[in-house]
Each structure stands twice: as structure tokens, then as C-alpha cells.
Image (tube, rainbow, N blue to C red):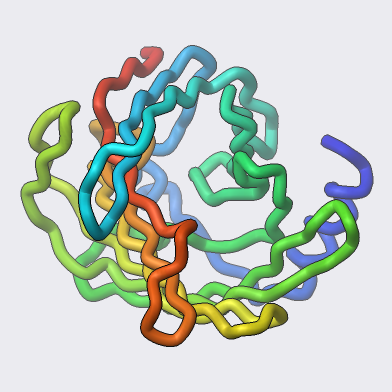
Length: 204
């Protein structure tokens, strides 16, 4: 890992409230990405539902702390984003609950760290909203629907974000569907998106 990134992540971890991941929760979540895991998605406009693209994200390296993907995405070992495919670094955050239980809630706060030194903050409240059947091109799954809602500060105008993710822990290590609706006031901004799993392969 880049030394600068390591220092930033360590500093953010010390400043953040700690949260525990019980061993049983890790088994329930089905974590454990392996080199060779591959996930293909189609990209859709979340409003018109028109297909706008496709991509495949394959695990290329797994270290003691991080998982690296072919798209440039870097996550921690539990799937929480540390660097997005656009190259923006994030301080540690909790996208997923320590246990999948409908009604479970949590709060996460983190910063984007840009290469030019600019930062901004995101505050989100998460909830396991439902356990339901969901279909995507890769198949039909019993999945947990996870919702994250909050605000991005440090930018003007202020933006609101709603992330909705369907996960099938124990069957698929990556999201089945992920949708991001981003608004300035009531206007949906162009970087909103929806991705749907088309096919996947997972190393044993």
C-alpha cells in the first residue's frame, strides 16, 4: 500500500468510533474474496432503466488488509470501499452491517481524499431494510436489502445520497444489485446509477 494512503487510513481509523465484526457475522456475510473471483454487471440509468454500459470486475490481489479489483476498485476484506474505480480514496467506512438482521441500523461517516488534497465528508445512516426475493440477469436470490441515506458536505450545492444494495451472503460475495440516487435539491444528478449482476465466478 502507498505509505501516504496508509497514514491517512490509520489516522482516520484512530479518529473513528470502533466497531466489531464477530466471527459468526463474517460467516453469515460470506466474506472471503479470492483471486480469480469475477463479477460481470450491466449498468442502467436508475430512472429510465435504459442500459448504458457493462463491465467485469475481477479480483486481482488479496492482501492482509485489502482486496484489489481489475476495475481499480479497492475494498477492505469485508467489501467496504477504500478506493473507488475513479481513483478517489476513502477513509474507513461501514457499508454493510456487522450482522444481517432485518431492522438493524448503524451510522457511518467518512471522507473522500482526492489527489489534489481536497476532501469532503459523507454522513450516512444504514439499515437492513428487508429480506426478500430479488431477480437480476445472474438469477433469482433470497437477499437482504441494505439502504444507506445521507448527505455529502464540503461541496456546494449540498447533495443527498441514497444507496440501495441487495446482498446474498453465503452465495455471492459481491452485490447482486446496487443503486445510487444522488440529488441536488430535488434534481437527480447525472452520476446516479444502477448496476445489476449478469454473471459471476467464484474461486473455491
